[in-house]
Image 1 (cartoon, rainbow, N blue to C red):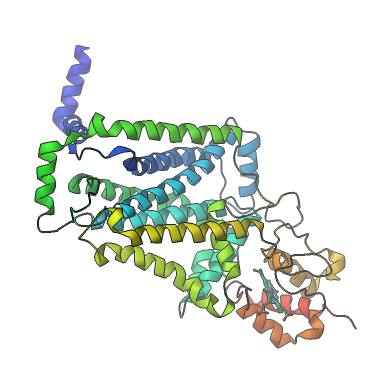
Image 2 (cartoon, rainbow, N blue to C red):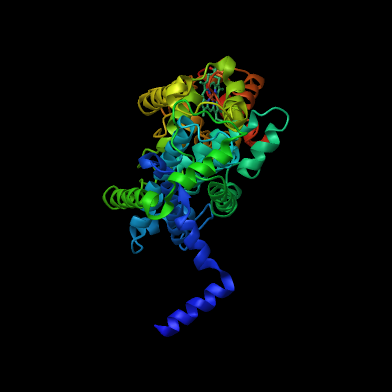
Length: 465
Ligand code: HEC
């Protein structure tokens, strides 16, 4: 006991950590913060869960295009607790996305982004973007058909950016085509770059929370005035502040604990998502769809009016990003109560309504690409070597098949191509594949010249005499 004490006091003398932790835990916060304030800490907890389970998965996952799929299969079916760890990582990802969005909506409705907390909001927007990228890259490193399809969509989106589109598409997929380099790249984003950024920005975000204080619950008729805000906030803390621990933080603990229990239960009972088909078109046993939080976006992508597509695909996320970043500059003072900011309610209701209807369309609609399409067989292709055969295989591999049927194999999203050789010339085919069209992605950025000419040769051979 005495030894422990002297070790502690040595440690405290050299680092000062114990007392500074203590003062952080006991620092005064506004009273009455209630249950609305638990979502930020729960998001943090979900992130730490992802780090822990992610490290565990990284012990066995092999980030190479030949082995990734098998290594995940091994983790899921054969390793000790592997299925549960994958389950936690998967449900934890969903939890983190849900929580970060609720946290953001709460901050928005309570106008906690106003003076002096503009930087809290801006770092939060960066963290939101990082979370979405983690969801996306996480889905890709699963390296099944869904993964490949997601990368096609992302590369397509990047390819539409004016001027630097081609370069950006190459950058996203790591070269001209989707393959081993794509996976290595996505893996590096998923385990090094983005988590590193998240750590840095969480540190910054939390530092700002301490520096600027937790926002007090908004009150009608108490607008924010940057000239007087800090003084009156300090004053309020002195008069009415309560210690962070335990008066405010017990709710964080209770809520965080419930979130963890929910994640664990889902991981054990429901488990991780089935791995979709491996990116080998000869295996047909599963039906992959994008992870739920991307379904609405895929639906939007497919529903977009063609004249707007090129603009929306690049412009949509850009405008949303700019709006989020501009928000604290557009309004950093004035009323905070949501009752005095009805338009803030309207924005949230509108966003929830449009995302959920897109989502409903996304999971039910017949127009969505058919990921279950049976690949073209050698008989249908009608060759077993040469450019026509290679073109036929590319038709399977590049996802053309998800949208186009040939001789009864494939999706219905785009026109049937069984007789396309009668209808379009070589140039017309090349142009169509390069540039896409009415709800067809442009493949110009993702095909090599050889691949393009094989595909065209194959399509040109689809005709009835
Ligand atoms: C997301 C679904 C989708 C994918 C993937 C897709 N297409 Fe299409 N494709 C379409 C749609 C929709 C159209 C109709 C476009 C239009 O009329 O402007 C189309 C049109 C075409 C046409 C012209 C058909 C005609 O009758 O004029 C060709 C040829 C074609 N696609 C080839 C391909 C090839 C080759 C691939 C793979 C590299 C591919 N498509 C991938 C949806 C898709």
